[in-house]
Image 1 (tube, rainbow, N blue to C red):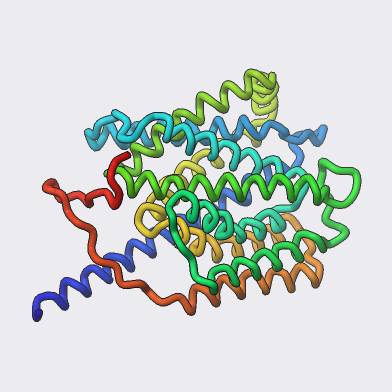
Image 2: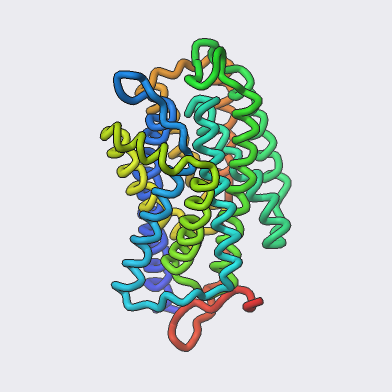
Length: 344
């Protein structure tokens, strides 16, 4: 018993550092990512004030960068490139992730970044829904209360925008109906992505880089196919060729997007999908403030009330949440954590 205390303290300290690493990585990469994606999709380029309209091209650039980096990690660590899970399961995450990112970029054409970012706070709602169906998880009444308050606050924030915040892709006030529809699609697909990632990590003894490599490789093929079928590949390349500053923005966007993928997958594997959704709260608040200052987005007093409801609910949930006592994972003969569920 006397030797168990230092071990326990060591485990707690190790988990604390893991949490700092996860939060810091997500905050830095995704705040930069948010600023860049708003600039690319909503700010004009060149003397003719041209707008970049090819959101699927951004997805392709992001995924091919991430795929190359993850393959490099696997080769450098001399780990097998063979898939651990059936390939179709990687493809499911890939398709959902492409739809998530495309909805996110397209929504910026019709709603401002603060509106989009606050709507992302409702991420816990689809995570809870998908968690119930996919992971057979159960949630407490307080969790549903917080979900309701978050939905209420997001609705107020979206439905009562400042009248002077105009989208460059619409003739008047932000196209709320189409923008909200895209955000609903984003939330649904994103909730499925993170929850199914959680299931894969717990169902298989899977390396982070292994999942990222196969998921992004599938995304590269699918997004490239979509660009070719839509006839957007050559126009997107031509736009980037004519606007060097857009090329630099996309290159930096792909870099931070790649880094964020590793931090996100690490966080989901270490802390779970719902904890990941909670970690995003502070990042979203910082992103909204930076966007309002950087791009001059006005906020109405009703939007401030909606924001207070959303962030107040989420921070209250995190403050009142009691840590659950979990038994340590069983170890296999090679020292790795054994899967929590049998391989299907």
